[in-house]
Image 1: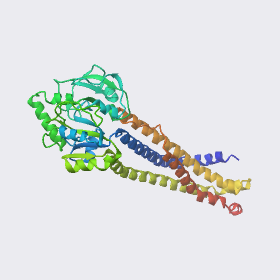
Image 2: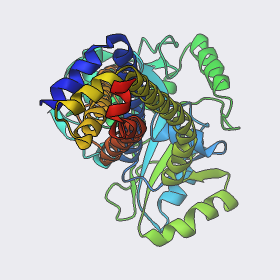
Image 3: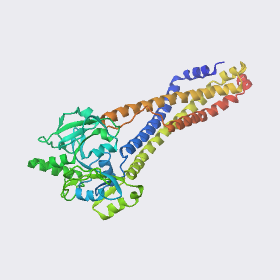
Length: 435
């Protein structure tokens, strides 16, 4: 006798009940798969975007905000810091490399970052076309920014105050795009890079009073501006990547200039035990370690994901009870049929196997539906995030935790069908036929 075919026939005999069980299992499985994929890829993205950055030095305020704004460009800066004071820490023997950042302007939602070519090097950024800037008001566009804003070598763009669209535009001072970066799969793809000289020249060009008012209003929007100047835009005078090996020595006077943050790479791991504490205690600046803030952020996100996973687990358990109820009810209705199978030569083990197969087929169908929904949804979300947020995510990946999930689903399916199958195994043929 073909027991798998018989099991399928029994499931088709109650199509609505079977469909409900499969859908419940599928939704619970899809939810867990999606949460696993989101959690893993979020963690990978945060780690990838912070690589090569051991410490962020910026204005006093929230360390999480400092890291989010300077490393992930996902928040407003905490304010400005004097470039001269930043230079002091950049030249510390414990610092191997320091990359300055000036934030405050954007173009069509893409942040314009005043920095040095060393910033692109943090992400192994390579030019796909053109060159890096050699003069003020020259810019290099990240791959996603160039694609979505239709920028190419020779294009011109006008920056606007603020880190989202709608700010006051510097119409009289356009940037000229001189290079486009190749895709890196990091935050670099969604940025427009220029020199610190460009930022300083732009904001010291003798703007009309309405420019000054816009600057002032924007600075207040930050809520954490440096006390000497409310502007979030870093107003400083020269490109500098402070490297302890003096690869990019500072040129020019930095007195009175400001930047937004300094991205630091340690000379040795031992610096992590002394440098941040010293900066926080002995200066007006703040030092935040991206690794620590990432861990804290992921813990906060993890609490939410744990709650959603618990809800998905409830769905799966509900489906398991539903499978149990359906099979147990079917057993009661098919007692005579099972007795006839025994009379036709079926053994107790074969009858038990028939019931187990029904439960496992339901679980297999629910699991297939769930994994297809989970990975499909992640792929759709990944494409949307790549296009709108520059975040690299995909559904075409497999996590070790998913194998654990499969084992768990099979176990739940076996447990849900075990009692009905055991009842079928213990069927008293003579008593049923006599009744």
